[in-house]
Image 1: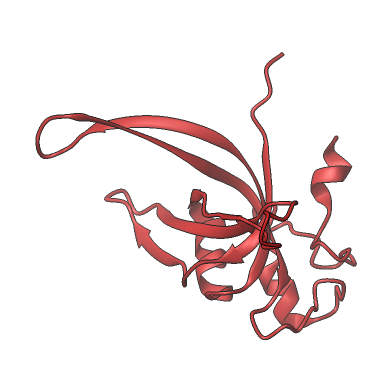
Image 2 (image 1 turned 90 degrees about the vertical axis):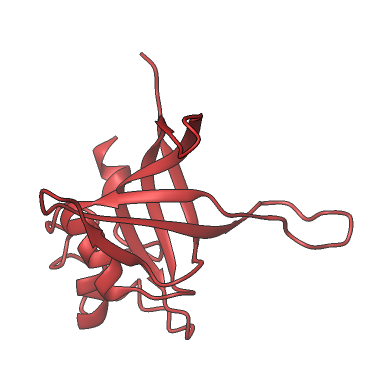
Length: 150
């Protein structure tokens, strides 16, 4: 069995811009600033900026309840697609298709992810199609349904 699973912890590079397809489905493309787990020779942690896409109600919730600098966790998969540009050249794009996301920390530094009774946090943790453990306590990394599904 092949596996294609991505788990990232990072901060939103900018506010998530929500748009709708012609058929009315919500979609958002965004980037996360994700620090690597080692320091370079200057003592800095290199940062990657993967491109992500999210669909449907999860896209709407991400755009409505988060802003630039907020820390989130995502679970998704890598997808590669191609399209023809204006010069009729094939352009290949690899991006992460987000399956679930979890709020961790606001840009202001208020770490409320561990408090399942925090109203703002209840709205932000939108990992599972609206069934996002709003009535359950979350751990420090947001709700932990991913670990429970294994």
